[in-house]
Amino acid sequence: MSTEKIAIEREYIKISWFLILAIAVYLLFDKLLFSPTIEALSFSQWLVPLIFLFISVGYNVFKTWLFNKDGQINEEVFRYLKFFEVVNLVFFFGYERLFDLMFVISLVFLFYIERVNIKSLRQVAIVLIFSYTFFIFLDFVTNNINSEDLRNLFYTLFYIFWFSSSNKLELFKKGQTNEINIKLRQFEENLKKQQKLCEAKDAKIKELEREISYLKEINKRLNISLGEFFNLQEISKIITQILDTNELLKFVNDVLIGVTGVDKSSILLFNKDKTELYVAFSNLPENEQKESFKQENIEWLRSVALNCENGYRNKVSSEDCPFINGRATKSIMYASLATKNDKYGIILLEHIFEDVFTEDNLRFLTSIAAQVSIALENSSLYQQMRSMAMVDGLTGAFNRIYLYEVLEREIQASAGRYPISIALFDVDNFKKLNDTYGHLFGDKVLQTIVRIAREKVRKGDIVARYGGEEFIIVFNHLESNEAYKVVERIRRAIESETIEDNLIQTRVTVSFGIASYPLHAENVKDLIKCADVAMYRAKSSGKNCTVVYNQELEMKV
Image 1 (tube, one colour):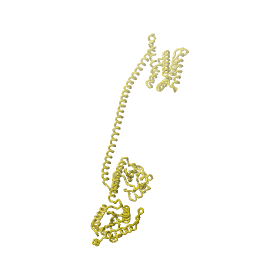
Image 2 (cartoon, rainbow, N blue to C red; image 1 turned 90 degrees about the vertical axis):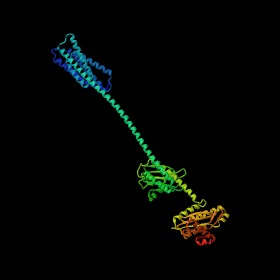
Image 3 (tube, one colour; image 1 turned 135 degrees about the vertical axis):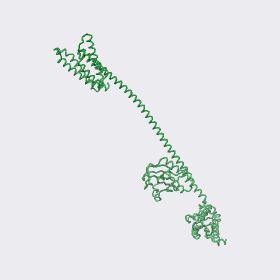
Image 4 (cartoon, helix red, strand yellow; image 1 turned 45 degrees about the horizontal axis):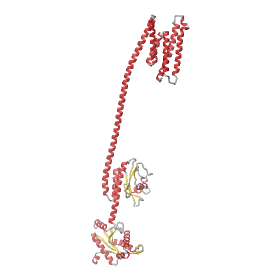
């Protein structure tokens, strides 16, 4: 049995106790107080009522015990119990013909039927009513009907009418309730359908919103990529046109600050043997550059550059990166400067906020770094080619072409406002030296005198090979008499130098001729001619000496 049925049956047991009590009281008053004969006191008159009461009490006690157990009650057992109960009531009420008591009991039953809706009470009430009807019909057939039977018939008809009315009303209510329940179920089903439709629409809307958001993100990235592509294209055009390294690095540094919005940007390059990094360009103050980029602070940057690594770190401290000590840097991004042929250094960007750099930023910086690396390689090749074009391959001195370029440029820049002196010299008896010791030793001699001359001149002065064993030194901002002092130091140093090559040891001398612009000549050609006249005079004067040009020398020649 279900829990609900058990609870209802417990309520019915309570009503049964009231029924037993009512029957007992009724019998007591009816047989003792209102009976006109002494027969009411006989045992035969009390036997059946006592048996009924005994059975009813025992039955109710048994049901009370049965329905208070924790276990489930079998439906078959329950039906047998109800059958026994109905038979007991019908037999007793029929035998005793307790129609007056039935009226009271039926009222109680009907009251509980309306409020508790106990089916057991309904069943008992129906059985009682039909049993009453049967006995009245029996009296009518046997012609024993009397006024009491008529009254009981009235009660019976009243009960039947009441019961039918109650049933019809209940059926009407049930019909209304069922109709309402059907409508409610239909409404609930429609509501569920609408909810499902709404959920489907919401899901579709969310899916569309995700697609729109995704498309917006794609569009945003495309715009960024297009912007980066345009910037890279324009930057690449300019980078390929810049051959000067310092100018190139300044331009790149300015571009990176402008495009990425960083606070600090630095470009560090390797020295020749790749053992150290030095600051090639930075927007940091010079004193801060020296303090931050000490070699012990940038060992990690050097390792990154040597390994050609690119990346970013959105949470950094001076403990991790000593080179940011003293600055409010929270994020860094870096890209190595390298090509297949060489490694040049690293670009370092700094920002004062955390979590600012992204993969898109790194991709842009890496592209810029690749362009700069190619430009640095091109610049290096350009410098090498320019050096090859300007420098004599044997001695390392500048060649004749570069000599003329320098003289033309300096004379044009001077425009007569400051002097420019030159010293033309060659090796005394060089042909004899070549014939005696061979051309290889002759080359050794030329290399030695160029080395000595470059060691003795000022920074900015130029030593160039004019042709054969002839060389020219260009002294900017020096009068001829001041140039004479420098040349004499060079001549004496060459004279005292012992030149060795395997078993050969010898010393050589040189003769110098000095001329000055604008004192002696007003153009390059005449200036060199004047110096040549002075050197010829030194040769004719015994060699190993220095002669300054004057017009008298021209006349003697």
